[in-house]
Length: 363
Image (cartoon, rainbow, N blue to C red):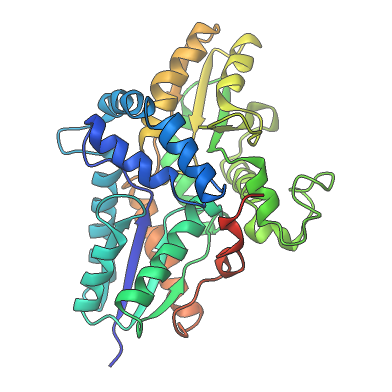
């Protein structure tokens, strides 16, 4: 008899704010070939010789500013969302939570699902948009672990939900009270990616960041184009929320290294907006469903400092959807739709399979 389960996967956090724990987390994260997509010797040298000697102490200090008495904000929220979804779906579906990096691990979650007798599993990366360094790595890793620990379990990979009506409705609902407060401008800040990641995800090699207006012109490449999907989220949000065209802009944060990343950069955009007379700024981060270091420290603390030092008066972070009731209802709806959209037909990865090997190589 078949039994169904759901595996929620988020990015992850260090086990604590200690420098050794942060070093372990960063080492695991940055050595992922879908994060730093260079050949192994180059990646090892960059991570172990250029980043890990100093970065863990800096990151540990940043984590310390957002850590709670219960631990990582991302992990706490993810656990609460997992339990809420379990309550909503009932006992017929088993819900587990895993982090792509550190704990709780995908291996632990998959072991528990196997022990529960799960035969059909929906793998749900909690990233609304497709990127090989978030959605793809979570989906591929879950598939690898399933093949090793539960080879007879049938997997279905939930697809990015960047324009799902339920997601957009929840994003707008969780932002409503902030949008009603006086403000001059709304900045959509998405996590950044190296430009080469977009080119690598474009199977045609002729559209992303090549064709004029590539993200606005419909194309099959958009199925795996992070930037096009981010902009689609923005268009749906502003249309639903009624945000005037001249009162919002888009930027990308968290760049690492010297290679070109998606532009404009959030930190520079904060300076530009303040210098152009924006005094009260709202910032929303739709690529994250749960508040984390990138929202609570990078935007709400450092970003606010940059904005005020550049002439602004107030920067208000719109919190992520976290445990908002409309988001919990939306998540349940999206999960149920994935189950009813088609039966799982064996361990599979869609559409990440086409990049399962190629994305491990340097561009």
